[in-house]
Image (cartoon, rainbow, N blue to C red; front, side, top):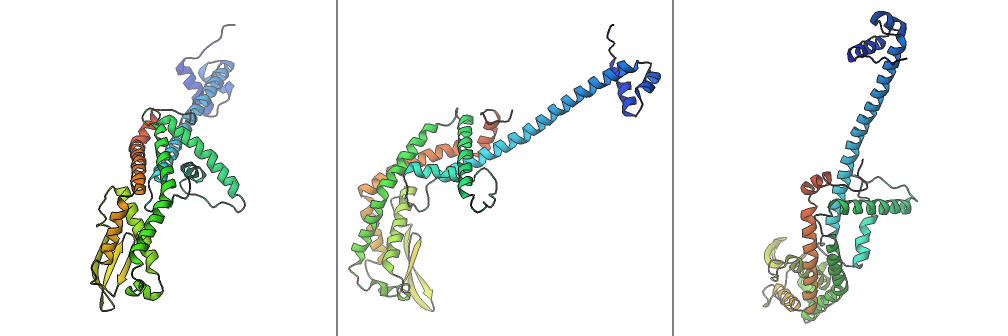
Length: 318
């Protein structure tokens, strides 16, 4: 028996009456279409509609998931740049590989980290490592055509140099400060801070190390901008405020000595600037900064987000 197919107009009528609540027999009487033909056509239409709706849902879900994918990669890229950027004050307590891997333990993917239940710290750490490794590989896949990821080896080499040399430079800076100021046995008594039981020498050492590092990362050899002295009033008494990087001292006695404490500190900086340690660290820092600048340009969100849209990785929603 030849199959009867309904015209679009007839199908519209069947759909209208069926969704209006009519039985198949009533539809047959109203339209003149066999109830079996009408029922078969309606069921085929309903099945096709379900498929279309499912496809639409998948498209919408795919759009949402892809948006999340872009957000996570953008957030991860920003965290990577922050992780690789040189600190304001370094410790270099670990080698490059150990330090770089520490980013994998961080909770980066979520916009706000939830509290980790007590006892689940190790499990959460393992989950972070697994997720961050996947995101890093995804980021590299999306940017393989415009980022030289092998340049990370240069960054690692530079950081390992700092890890190896910086402790010696700290010790050398401390030795220079002590050699310079040990000639003044009453040094602590010159300063307001000293009379509160705070030792001046460690403050000078920390200040010199900070100025030394600031000069290295800024590329400026002149320390005058980081070491200065100015007269200020303290409890109606004029004192000399000496600023050395992040540290400062209030000098009450021997304020007119020549050379001044600030001049001595500048002399220490001149002496340290020409050491092999500073030259080696400066070269390493320049190498690291070059890698960070290159990555920062390519991973800028305004550049990265559209780039992800036009590329694919194995984590991209279908």
